[in-house]
Image (cartoon, rainbow, N blue to C red; front, side, top):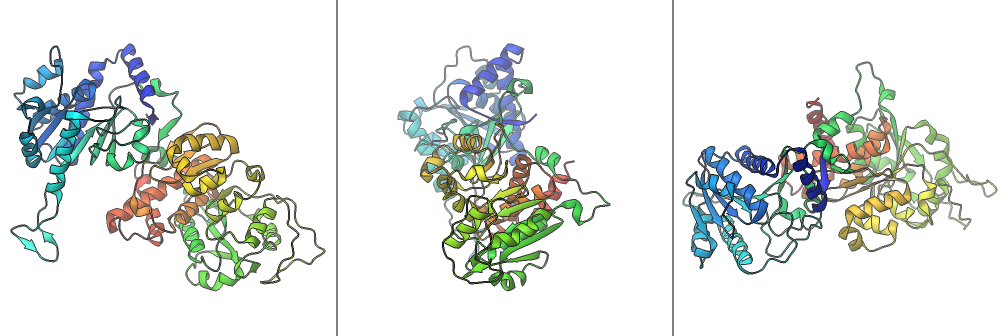
Length: 559
């Protein structure tokens, strides 16, 4: 069963259909609460843990009550702190009370002294106050409750010297209570990702049956911590109509290119990377190294001749196609050189480190058959066309990936999407996406999902919109969200590694949409592995390619 990404209304309809099919709301709530308890047990171990469950009204509070009961059965010491709840006829309340768990009501704790003490004593705080249906601003008692929990947590988490203190490292033990959100952190809008100022950020969010859009949209991403999706018994067929899903290890593992024992380098494809300029010599190296580490049989760097010695000194695995340049950036005459070789390759990447200089803009326009600007050009570099030679009007390009300055240059060409072989793969970050559309970056950020879906349909190309929880969309309406939100990847050159990984998948024969999904997932997983080994501060783009084989190995082990 794939993991779907849904709106609140879509989830409501799916749950109603499940209830009508025989999976009752009571069964779903029981399964949900048990899943929360199991996630906590897996994360830190429930036995002997001190757990505070914050209980609200409605289904979210009901899930919390079920979780409390199962946690108690697992050997945890559980305390209920109830904001407000109608208990008459509440079966889950009665079952939980049967466990003789201590209960404190907010209405009886007016100065919140008891709440502060419970937070201080707890190893885990379960947020079961408000679920996916809440969109109103948080005010009054609930705002005060959440502020008290947050302030008490901040005080507990503030580093301080202990009785035994190593001066170079500080406290030998630092207690960090974990916050677990049921479905969504209280204060997170499950459709838009908007965060109420009073929201309680979670370290772990256990969501039910499907990912909610608010989990993957900013600023909500900052509040969910680690995201776990629980199976609560809803038949998979009831969500088959949902076209948006979250990539999973099993999904990506099934798409990885085969590696037959009798292979040769031609088996794994040939990738041509058009990249680099005098000011950006690292970009072609990063893209090429990623393509090699992701399994491409042959990688060729097509770059300005002037930077070849610098790049070649650090990139031994690639072959080279030296192109005419104008003061260290690609010149229009490079088209003729490329035209003679490009047909030999299985995939083409254009963009990393090209710059947006006028000669390079003319080069790209001519390469794509968008017309040749006949303005006079300085004769700098080599292999210049004679004045009476006719420019190429159209060149048959192999499967294409456009990235970085390739995208920025496209944005300056009228109806550029008509010039690309369809479907190409576009890998913009929000700023580049805004330039391609002709809008402000903030407009893209405000509706990343809608933006990706609308523009891929309009342009007819696969769009990979980068960011926390990267979105991959294709013209057929398929949308896959990559499950990574990792600040270690927020570093210059990370996008070049991503582009190289995607062109590697394309060269090895994956279709455009699948190549973007697999390449993006491997890049994200490599970032997670780098963060595990090196911490999220200080991971450089040059570190990432070496983690790509390890990412592939981890997925292969699932097969």
